[in-house]
Image (cartoon, one colour):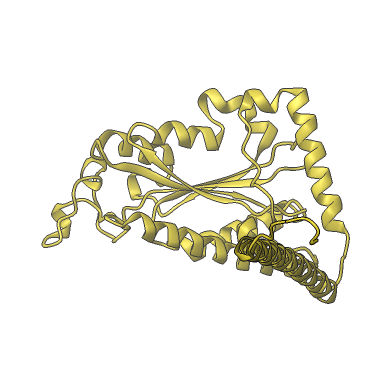
Length: 309
């Protein structure tokens, strides 16, 4: 089943080169290169980093201002139903759509084994938000502050700065919808009848908590792995059943529920009315007894004098 997942991450100064080595499976991550690195490429790099993208990320760590960001990253789950070539074509179309010729980027496709023993393809799209404007700059100047009056004397302009949290949140939501549309187009082209839905469970009307990402130590725990696999299997079995249109059944259930509520309300009203009736009857009885007592007290008492002679 195709997995719908797209996250956006931000890299701080000092983290860019290490992360580039991680997604490229180089240096201390080289042991995994032949295990799960499926494809990689880089694009839109300045001339001094065209042949070695690592130089770009190294310069970003050195020259970007200390409180700045050196990269953003899209981490995206790819449909395992697509083959390697189809996945590469999909992610390249996504890069053309979202990055184009604007930003320097590095792409890596990883395909490790998932817990169920099947493929777990996903993409890392790492990019820098300094715009490519065709002006030649050395590494140090490239990451300086942009000069709007004389661009040749300043650094490359940084895009998407100064945005509020809500604006970025809305942009990520729109980004996920564009990924959904593009992915489903590629799935359709491949002749597959599966689709992804990037909406949250809540927006889909599904009462389910999103699956939390496991820590590496948790993923190695057989007890946790088995429990997670059972949960995923149960979800897949539920999704395999076609329940059809249950609108009439739901309407009937709602009607029965409404009738039950009316009955309970009627019982409550009857009980309240009966209690009121008993109180009124008790009050009338007390008033009658009090009236009778008053009459008895008002009648003169007869004295017995004995028989007349």
